[in-house]
Image (cartoon, rainbow, N blue to C red):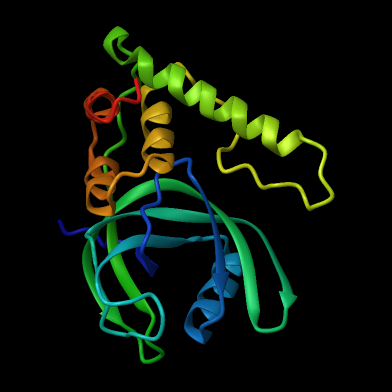
Length: 210
């Protein structure tokens, strides 16, 4: 028996969204304004996929990676007319099964879920990853809470902090480290948290960070 795959509007971007990651966006193209409005109305979110070929703005024949992450819309405002500011959080990963372009240029895909990762703690050999992320979070928290005349700096890592969770630690380090986008994409697509953390740990050692 064949099962239908759910459809999901896709926002092609030059970034990799990880589950649990925060992603603020400025939306101004009509097709994406309509996509966001509809997503907020039905509570469905939208998919974020890394661009493989093409550009974020204007182009309708953009090519994306097959595996992406669903974005949940948490907040929005329109302080500037015609520009929608939204904050999103990555939820679950998906794989594109088929895709089509609507007349307005919006990419819509039939998707299937990527399997969840098994829960895993931090291996002893990757303890440096946990310590590094703790230091990063402490500095970000301190900078955010420091007295300033400017508006409070948004925190790029959301609570709760799960420093004993291999998936959470690996995902957050992948987001903040200067890893090339194709490599980030491969790390996001992995379904084994300890393997991802091991790769990150080796990256940190190679660059003399830990």
